Image (cartoon, rainbow, N blue to C red; front, side, top):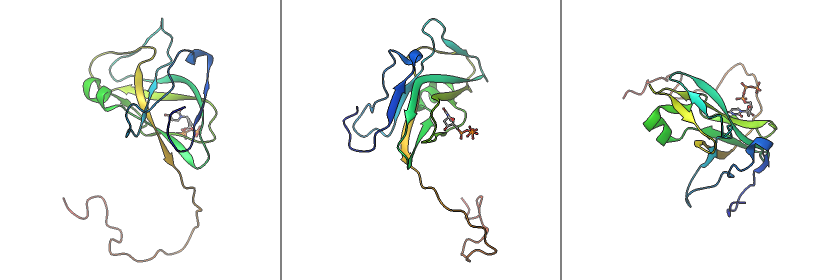
Length: 154
Ligand SMILES: O=c1ccn([C@H]2C[C@H](O)[C@@H](COP(=O)(O)OP(=O)(O)OP(=O)(O)O)O2)c(=O)[nH]1
């Protein structure tokens, strides 16, 4: 387990996740932990330009209630290869018990090969507030009003 104070995310390793390193904070102040690709070692996944694919991580997450895991792109892959997460930030619900997968898309102009163990994305744990929803006839007045989408200028 990471040597940090805080909530614990339990990870259940799936058979094809055998040998994949657990996510870990790489530096003391890191916000995210890298997720590795659990694709077969003898069958790397090729993302041709414009193609998207679900990359298995090899783990089921048990996230404590009141938290979510966000799946975010790695800036290095985005900058160097145009590889990003299509649905960023991906949301992993605390009650999800399937394998966590990373939805990558290749926005670059060259093939990108995802090999087993490659760090394809990062996970950030964040608190979640569930709110009540109430339908009302009116809302309180504010100085912004309905201004948005650039209403305050550049
Ligand atoms: O990048 C992602 C995003 C989601 N999920 C899993 C965990 C999440 O809890 C579940 C549902 O995700 P989401 O709510 O984004 O999907 P949806 O399209 O609304 O589908 P659903 O109807 O299953 O909620 O899929 C992943 O493994 N990776």
